[in-house]
Picture 1 (cartoon, helix red, strand yellow):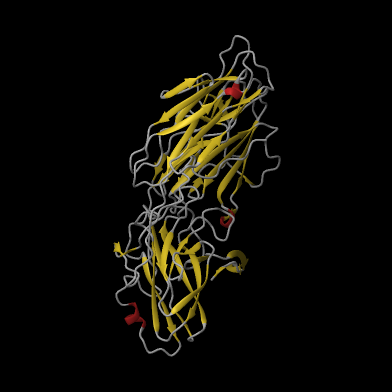
Picture 2: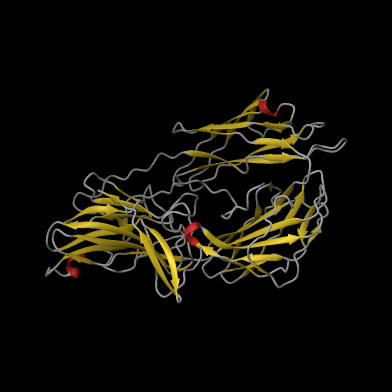
Length: 539
């Protein structure tokens, strides 16, 4: 059975590991002390390889009929937006496609028998995606169901990393449903938008009914509630479940070779916290369908499909067997900040100082790239203290452990949600040992400049991107104000940064999403209590 719909942005984003560099305090480079922080060097830029989809299924071509041609798009991207990516070379081998299907190579390829070497133009600075390489595949006439072949595509980047993908091509009788994908759209918060939904049966047999699955990301709310759909609005941000899912039983046949569109508009409203959103659509035959989907039935008219004469599966002319739909950009901002309340302890004692990355909204923010943190910040450990424990997603930058770099989560289901919701915070507890008396000052700042920065294009307020870290020994006469002098941050102040949009959190004040520890939520009479399980790095 084919997999369920992809839940993120439809365009495969670059698998960037983010970039961050020297901290910026008040807009300038920060000296973290007389000796300064360790030298911050950018990782070597590299180009990565991706596929629009991996495996393709065709129906055998009927006698006298024109074979169906599909386009497999090989995508490439690089990591550093500050530099241009040079031209790349892809190596293909289609020997495994012999007697199954033929391959049409794009321009810029040197073909030798069943192999090809293709040159891909580079990308200018500021652009992460290289041009797609479109390989056309169509089955050979007379090939029967059950035939299977494969081809390989390989790429070796400047860092010596080699990637090889081996998509398969299978011929099979029966229906084969393909969903259309349309161009990205822009919405204002509170505005309505719609997405065309088209389904093509590219198989060689009719299908008696179809199950459609539509997923609206957390920043979008469906307007219609079709009566033949059940709507699941359950939320589990910790596991990355943050969407509305409609599973629709469309009890009507889809003829082989025909394209169908939804009779009524599938529309949605952009939420106040929306930013980078999507509607993902999947279609399943009765054998692939979920038998008893969860959710509440809609109360509106039934969702129906009507034939689209001469229709194509998507406005951009491409198919994808896994999902279709559209991306939506909501014109919104989010004010990120960083803060850390002052802590007090006896000389020689251990204290816990927690750095908060706060989102003051209005947008909730998802990672802008796959496997990239929403936020990254640097810490100078307060003088007169020693770093003892730190969260899993933080790493010391020097052997003395005076400097620390921390990331938010990059994958769902770990120790805190990937998304930073409006009104919420990521918490990063640091355990320090006090080694002298007085009021000791450190610093923390969101890393938005330099070679390893995480850019926050939605954040237009940089004034709260820094905070002082203050540790006071019991009975100290020194004032926190004098200890914090010269810093652009302040004790306990919430500081800002820039991020990306997602779902709002509920409850009064900022909901703390504890960084570096596992969090579970238990609801009692409307109050949310967080239970924590320790999982820390130690010196």
